[in-house]
Image (tube, rainbow, N blue to C red; front, side):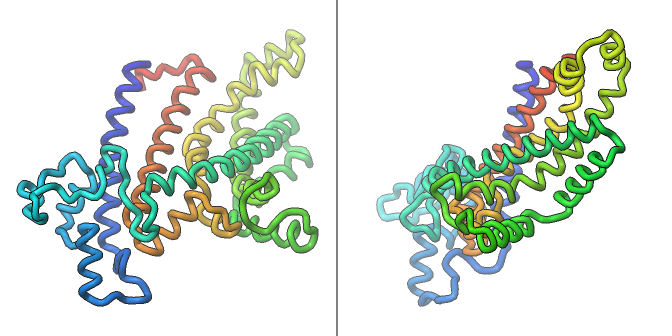
Length: 331
């Protein structure tokens, strides 16, 4: 177990370095910049603003400046750009945990924006995950227990529709039905449980469809094993066979799927948060991409990388509890 965690940690460092490096230089290749908006600034003001955030430096110097620990005094690596020769670094660097200032939200740093928006996306993600697991596991188990029946066919048709429909289409139907036709829920905003139910369902419904299909497949495979038929033949109650034996093995495909899914749900859906005007991390990421807010977009990208990698590691650890035959040291 310890060796597995050490290997994962080393691979995480490599993955994070590659993601940061590729994202940094790709974003600089996009036309425009954080201060080239619809209202153009005078050239003198534009030059002063870019100099304040060091956007007038060469890209390699900006990259080292963004990382942080490579910053030297102005007479060293970065030249003599200040009168007293002290470093003009405006933040500590991403490797020190400081993601820098937001270029568009002038009074906030990226750390501040993520600290305020991530809990909102987390709460929304928990509601979406509740819908996804409740509906998906229930539908998958019922379909597996009644294979090739009309109920199974109906469940599979609904799951297929859920996979085929994008979440913004589901959100549109929900708004029309439960906001305009039957005015039960608010159309947008944030602050109470009512604000979370519709976007949470729209975010979790496609995931529930995938979970239902995976649960059905996994359960059918496990229920066909000899030890299940032996337990039933010995007179063990069906409830015990289902909960203690079949369900534990049938959830392995679902657990594999939940790793990146949980990370993506907890950081919020880009589209759903925009539709329901939820001030979560996804909304800020869209705005950062539109406004060329380099540091904010990079911060959300790094956050998503950490969550996806961390959740995949937790999933691998969960395998050992669901199936003791799996040895992580050999993987």
